[in-house]
Length: 330
Image 1 (cartoon, rainbow, N blue to C red):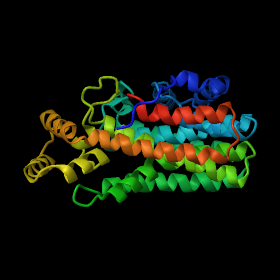
Image 2 (image 1 turned 180 degrees about the horizontal axis):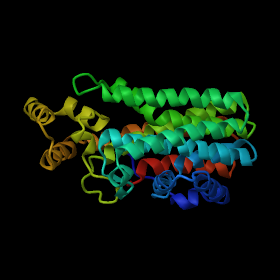
Image 3 (image 1 turned 180 degrees about the vertical axis):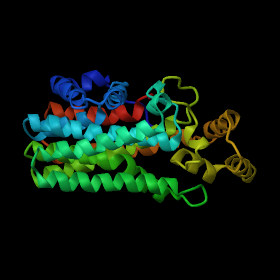
Image 4 (image 1 turned 60 degrees about the horizontal axis):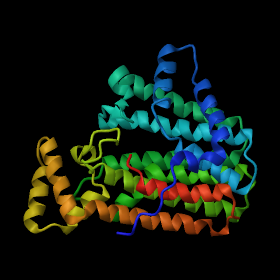
């Protein structure tokens, strides 16, 4: 595995857009204040639950890299975060997740019904808010992205370890994660007045950052030594999701170990003991390292995509953010 580069802290990476992010944060919370207490409570709870605002930051950095960051960029950054937050609320219901960012998930406090309905509200509000920008190109882009995200969730739901190839897995993480990140950077570029060439460059950068981000997330799910992740480890295995670490393991192990894995995957309940055993095998066969190496390949592609973007502090932050994503611990 390649030697880890010097990783810049996230607050330093985001310093060029620090004041802009504060304005986005204010808007995010202001917009969900309603006369319905449950809606306001659930929305505020998940929006205040420790998210890094990576997607809004990507949008603002893309805008700054080609032009001026304006109030329209703040609105677009909120829209991206509302869409992302809506998917988190829905995902936690689908996955029966008890934790989200080291806190109880909304569904464990208010129930599945409230989580789904507030997610629906945020999704709907995002498109209402989008209408205020009066830009049909942005509507087209975000409508397509929302469809891709839903496709990813459905495709993952219908796949299992016999059916999921590496190519299908990469499709799923593109749909679920990378599509919104590429959209954030493309929209940011449009609002900054970027050319078609710059839009394509930042779209490709965002796509590859998104792919790397999800690969790292999937690797961290099997890192049982990591106590800072903010969610239960081994969740993907317990839900029988085939992510790249497990796919690599299945392809690498001996026949006897493969039979053991198949027995675990077909068990009526996958226990913590099963998770521990799979993690032991992953350490032995370097499945986590392999996944992180694949993430680094995408980071290199992301940085190469920026070659046509003029050098400035925002571009530098995008490059630093791509490295941070691979070597983060949560």
